[in-house]
View 1 (cartoon, one colour):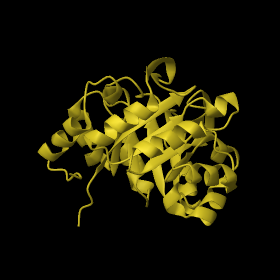
View 2 (tube, rainbow, N blue to C red):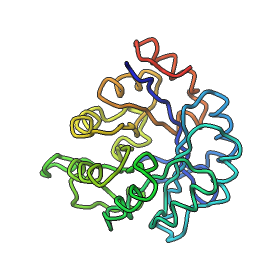
View 3 (cartoon, one colour):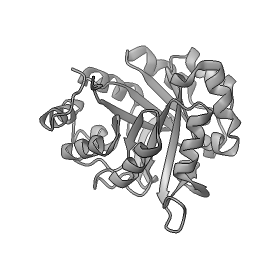
View 4 (spheres, rainbow, N blue to C red):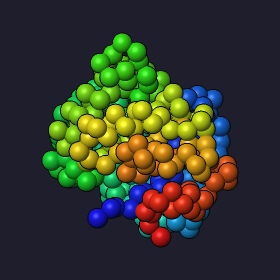
Length: 254
């Protein structure tokens, strides 16, 4: 049985506002997160991803109030990431309405965090968020970055993803920093390489600029497709993307 593919809007939030840039730089205001979340819910989004893109950089916790108000307006799974450093942070997010949490920088700094979250809450709660850059000369050609894509590491992206799955990550959010905000399409090679090593669902992120960009990401191995600016700007609706997927023979949720 083929599982329906998910379409997920991403709300990158800084200082309580949705923002978007190119390659994670030159961020511009795109609106109120609660209003946008409600709009996407009404359009038929399958899930929402809420990322506080400056939480780790600023050394502060995720904006719990915005998460709570968002969760009150939408009734689909909500993944929240940014500034999560402990199981207590996860417990608090779940208590205000998050269904899943995304971890990145803190897990790279202390991989045992992945085990701790999975052991306490279950793998289904834990999304490993991967901000990935191409790096010729490394084992896979891809490395992970931290702090919202601002800091490169020497950690091979595929090796880290494999380790995190073994530690208990239940899903991979694979974001191409090189493609992010460019609207030139997803990094299909990256998605395909992740699919080869992943025993858990893969969410493709970074680069969506047109309705026809989403089906190739699914064909490359993504279980779900995530985008931000094309939705925030009104260039595309969730319905537009689902129609394009159906036209390519891909099953989506009604």
